[in-house]
Length: 228
Ligand code: ADP
Ligand code: ADP
Figure (cartoon, rainbow, N blue to C red):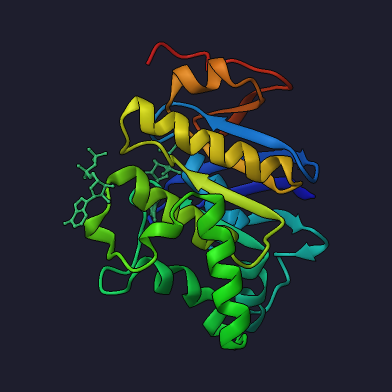
């Protein structure tokens, strides 16, 4: 469960990105975060994986209070949260296998455990046959699938995706959605910031709309609600 109480974020330069945000997201929900550019979607999402800290208010993720979380405990929090970016952020010199294994090597799992788990998640994203490829030998959709595999390898309870289909063509975007829905069916909470009107209107989920740093809409089976 993710809870924000009266969260405000003002950046160092004085920009007020979020105001008095109150939100409750239950375990296993699939939530789209929509709104115009500059509305505060990325800031909202970054606060959940502690890339940014609120200026005021409190955030709790599965019982962990982020307001009082010590820096040394941030890596532990990050293991409960998988993150997927618009531009994939894969390590270019590492193979698909190594990109996904990285998060497990950090926590010193044995080679056998790593091998088994990496091949398991590559199977989920249908990339077992490309384990030895380098990122730039893959299409954009395949690179995004690697980044999803990397995000779920540690069995996170929450997957956060910041415009995961932003760099992909429509067909590839639907494939990515199918994978995210599959992960969600297994009980993982998904939060996805998106500008993809077609997807939001076709695959009906909870929609949280942010405009000028405030939640202006929160609908159980919502629509995109913007022209573009
Ligand atoms: P969105 O994801 O909806 O486009 P953002 O959360 O990226 O919105 O941005 C919200 C506001 O905060 C914008 O005015 C943006 O310019 C500002 N902003 C975002 N990141 C920073 C930062 N690191 N420092 C200062 N201002 C920022
Ligand atoms: P898309 O048209 O979907 O962007 P690409 O044309 O980039 O896809 O790639 C098509 C297929 O060829 C993909 O499965 C990709 O893994 C493979 N591929 C692309 N570039 C290389 C490469 N340099 N070496 C090996 N395989 C590649």
